[in-house]
Structures are given as structure tokens and as C-alpha cells.
Length: 420
Ligand SMILES: *Cc1c(COP(=O)(O)O)cnc(C)c1O
Ligand SMILES: [Zn+2]
Image 1 (cartoon, rainbow, N blue to C red):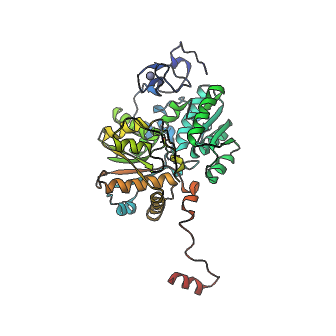
Image 2: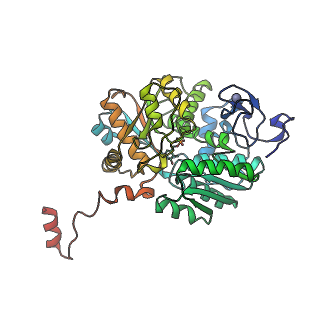
Image 3: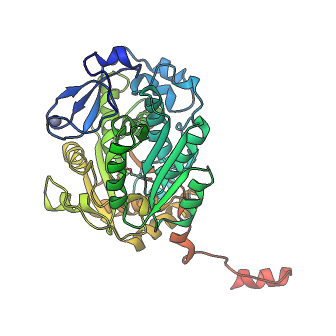
């Protein structure tokens, strides 16, 4: 899409405090538009802001959704005037029983299964849709490993937009159904997510009126993940946690939670206390964990093979920035086997009554491993991000759990089963 690039961006679009797009690599600035790569060096573009004064009281008086932070996001000031899915303000739970099992004395879960389509992706899509509307689009599209497809299809349906969703044809049945039910245009591609992503990038160049949430409007989309960090800090009573464990696919979420904590400190909304960020991957797709272990700055792509499909991005766009965040804050990245992922899902369910999808199993299992390696401090305030609902990946546990017994209709039979 071509925009009037000669005018200052702020006079063209109302995108709240967003002022320009800035290259993460070379710092080159361009006006706000549906662009994602720097025209000078092809580095990723990020939103640059000019924030006004923001107070705790002002945020607390806002809606019980991510829109309470609208003044910190690249969205129009009247964002809530249009129908949207209103994600966010999900539960922050004390997790004493899981903490006792793991050996963490101050543990919380940020339970993002409670979002409208049951994953954290509703946050990023809501921001992308609001920005895309202002930028003049009316079709919402994405390549997806599943959860994004659910979120795009639902958000577009509620907004009355057309949506086009591209997924690998190997995707879990539940995620296909949870997308198709919204009457989206769903294209199953015979290839990996990375193949689908490349295809979407080509399509984004051809289909000028399609907003691919994680391609041509990616700088806006990515900012939606900041709301996870904002909410954690607000729900802890306006302070930062000391440690946070975050699952890594493209790595966008992890880097934006880091950005959110820094912004809250800079704006004086919390004290700028030190925090350490930890990344969690499945061993079957662990390019960032491998780079961390080997001390590299670049992330070598891999071909994913794991049950944690929502994290199965072999060539993560924000991989190097994850390494930056983790190394700068004194954290780490690690990875766990698929068997450990299943154990993680079951441990979380058994101790806290929270049923997470495979990404949650990755986070819990990596937390256990990071503790065993002495990388996590057992006494520090620790938050785990539980980013998706177990109903999306029933296959992962189907062979591991089931009825304790199947009996005839008699109390004796039940008692017999209880003894067994
Ligand atoms: C997409 C996704 C992630 C990771 O997001 P990135 O920002 O791409 O790293 C984590 N958990 C779930 C459930 C997801 O769907
Ligand atoms: Zn650049």
C-alpha cells in the first residue's frame, strides 16, 4: 500500500501515541504505514512513540480489557467505538501448589486461556485490527500455526470484515474447526509453517488491501503483546516480577513483555526494579535455545518436529532480539522434550486446575529444568505465562489420561473400582 509518505505521519493517521516506524537495526525512521521492513537495511520496523502523562488511576478507571492501556498502544484514541473482541485482563493466579511441587516459593500464573479464542493471540490481533482499520484495510489475513488463525477469524467476524487464513495442512483438527466455524476463508497449505509464512509474504505484496496481521502490519500486531507485561505488573500491585518464563515461537511476545516492563518503569507507573526474562521452547523446535546455549547472536533455522505446534516456528523473526532480552536481563532460554511437555500439562492441571495447551506444558517443564540447572531463583517472585487453552490440543494428552474405571450402574461396582 502506498501512503502519502511526504506528510508527517501524525497528520495522516490517528494511531494514538505512535509517531513513526523505526528500524530496530539502523534506527532509520519512516512515517506510520503498513510496512514491516526497513527501506535502508531490511531490518524489522518497530513502533516509535511519544507518550503523554499516564497515571495508575487513569489506567484503573479504564475498561477491563487491553484497552485500559490504549494510550500506550498504536491504536486510534476512539478504539473502543468499533466492535472488537475486547481481550485481556485475564487472571493472575497465585500458584502455591505448583510452586511447592516445583520448588518455587512465590509463583504466579498469568492465565491467558481466558481470552475470547482461548490464547494470548487475541491481544495481538485486536491491536492489529484496530491499526489496520485506521490504515484503510478491510480484510484481515494471516499465516498461522493455529492460535492466530482462531483469533483472526473471530476478530474479523465480530468486526464484520472478511478474513483469509493460511495454515499448514497438518494442523490439529481442533484448531481447524475453531477457525472454520467463524466462516473465514481457510486455506490449508501442504507445507510447514515457515513455508506458509513465506507464501503469505508473497501474497501480502500482491493483495494490496489485505492486512496480514503478522506480516505487513506486524509492527502494530507485535505491540499487542506488551499488554501481557502491563497486566502482570498492574495485577502484582503495580510492581515488576523478579523472574518471568515465556514460551518462544517467533519470539515477539518475549521481547514485547520486556518492552512493557521498561516502559512502565520509564513512565513512573512502577519502580524500575530488576527482572530476569526466561525463554521456553520445545526441543523439537529450539533454534533460539540452541543459539543461547552455543553463545551465538544469530539463530540458525531448524525444521520443526514437536507436538508443541503453536511454537513450531523454525525460523523465528525475533530470535536475535530474544537473545538480547534474555542476556541483558540475566535470564536464559532452554528447551524440553515432548514427553516433558505432556508431563508439564498434567502437572499444571493436577496442581492448579488449569488446563493449558502444549505451549503451557513447555513453559511449566522449562521452569522445572531452569530450577534444576540453578538458573531460576527459588525465592524470587516468578510469573509463568500460560498462553493457550488445553482444549486446543486434546491430542497431546489423549493417550495419557482417561477414565479411572468404567463400571455398570451399581454402587458395589463403583466401590470395587475405588478399591482397585
Ligand atoms: C503464538 C504463541 C506463542 C508465541 O508467540 P511469539 O510471539 O510468536 O513468540 C506462545 N504461546 C501460544 C499459545 C501461541 O499461540
Ligand atoms: Zn534499517
